[in-house]
Length: 277
Ligand code: SF4
Image (cartoon, rainbow, N blue to C red; front, side, top):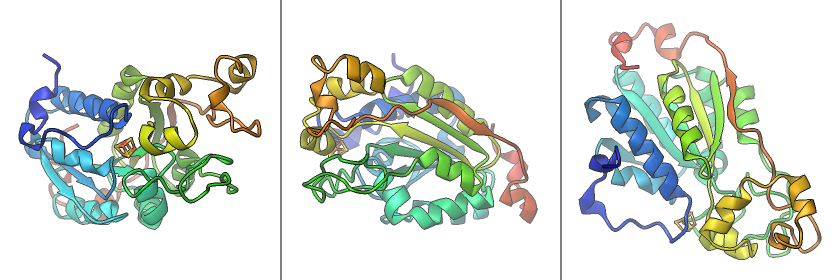
């Protein structure tokens, strides 16, 4: 049996994800990590904001909070400070976490609160209709950029490192084996851990940019610019009509790991040492 399947709330099925959406792979990887890491879900709380990625906490049989748009880290901060022995995992998207909730994200990292934030980065606002997100690559088409995006995009991992996160990693839906290792290390880390997960929105980002279906998008996560240039006949869809690459090549793996006192330690919170590692 697939480890983690028992953690899925069957009464919540069928799920809302579109066919080919990368979020299902990330959900599957996360429940596998939870099932192998924890003997009981009594010590685990999952907190999410709003969006297709945030919706997945409803499918996991743990303590779950589905909060308001961009505010998952505010709720998680309150929860963690009142119940420091819990393992708190925040699920957010690039629109929810970096756009609407950007302010909460950077300050949670600065405080080095001991929790894990997993950001599902599909370069668009999915649930609300495919609008431009802070991570949308330049020139890409979205609902709100019908002539192509004119703005530079955030490198979420670099931003979080600069804000003080003590563990920063990047994975992708294409590599669930690597993602599993990164999620395990992030959850084990004492301090604010952040995992930027490249996943794909077939319905909006894929369709608006004519990038193909779920498997095309997954495979395109592996393509380097030089390969795209060599392979344009085979993969013309990876370029904007004006020739710009629509898939950036980003470093994967653990990008930053340091140790400094957590906010819980600075506050001398009773019960904190009991957190399961
Ligand atoms: S709208 Fe996009 S992100 Fe949302 S479920 Fe569909 S494919 Fe996934």
